Image (cartoon, rainbow, N blue to C red; front, side, top):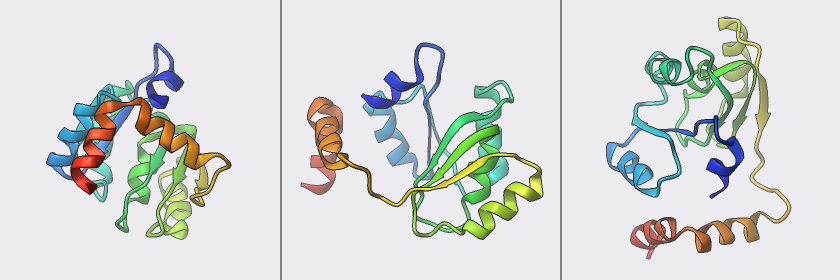
Length: 143
């Protein structure tokens, strides 16, 4: 799968999911080095998870695809100075993200994912076809 290949031998993929049941599903996919169930609306709880896993440095890249408002600061506190945060949800407040980063003194690059990338459909289908646990999970949820 793409994430483990992209981070290399020394990188880590960390998954955060609010639902314990869905966190267990994510663990079962074998894509992450660490998965935890924590509410992304609680930046202190997110930092408490990320800091020990990154030796206090924070993530190089944080992908926030949460469908609830109020998660911007958690993505920012999870990310190292000069790291990158991509927001992929219509619930994101870019004002909250920009002011939150400024307010805590975190110099991160903030990106807006628009949901489109050339070849995204083929890439997604290749991921599902190439990873049987993912295909099974999607089939069990969506038929």
